[in-house]
Image 1 (cartoon, helix red, strand yellow):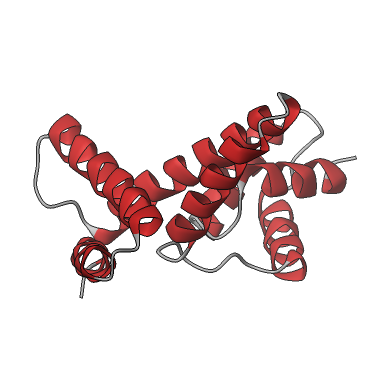
Image 2 (cartoon, rainbow, N blue to C red):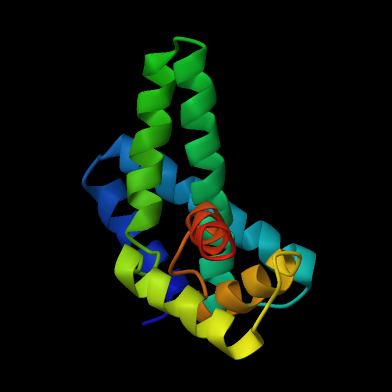
Length: 147
């Protein structure tokens, strides 16, 4: 079953179960996927494309949570946090720090970069971990190895 089919099935289940918060989160996810389909001008999106869209939505939720907490709006931060937990159910599992470190080390061993080649290493590592690690985590690991 594709991710879009799973989203739709979970949406119907939450709707029938009167779980309004989950319905709202799933509705936002479905809308984001539909907007991406319109933007890319093809239907349906493949699972990797849906993962990219959902990763973008998760990043937006994380940023919103930070902003709301800084503005002392814990009620809105809680809503965003709930949406984030729903989104994360459809994303691939994040790799462990040790696996990320070994991936970074493998790329560094292959490329033999200098301290100025941060961008090359970042792009190679991001391609290798494909959605399994947040860009901030990858950036921190690459910076640590390129010191």
